[in-house]
Image (cartoon, rainbow, N blue to C red; front, side, top):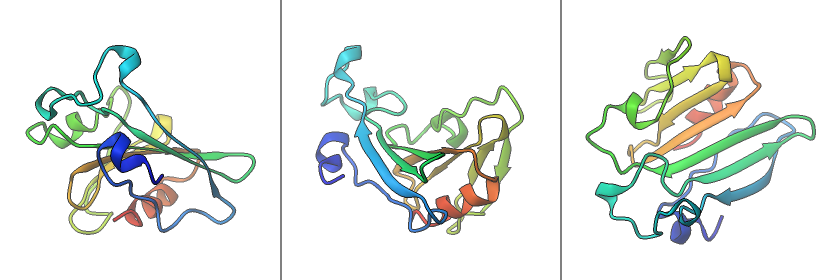
Length: 142
């Protein structure tokens, strides 16, 4: 986690709330070099989810996966920028995260997408938990 700002280009946001029994069990980042992208790609050329950070919480039998990345695509609409795939039903949760932030929930994959309070960090939370629990986790990430 301490190396994330230099590796990924942003300060990670950790949740202030995770359900009881879950502890951080792993962290890592996706190095873009194996797919031919440099580490210092100019922001106007950076793809969605460029150099993401992954954080995993576990309670021993299930996991909460978080993926964070810096938002480079300011002009792209939020849903497109988050790379939400609306193949199935998609629920937009208006202002449930505080500060006017919206969350986008995909029930089929138990995945919640949102931006940090300053809209500079994109976050994806995936877990086999009720949507309300995912919203609580997201709301605690300011």
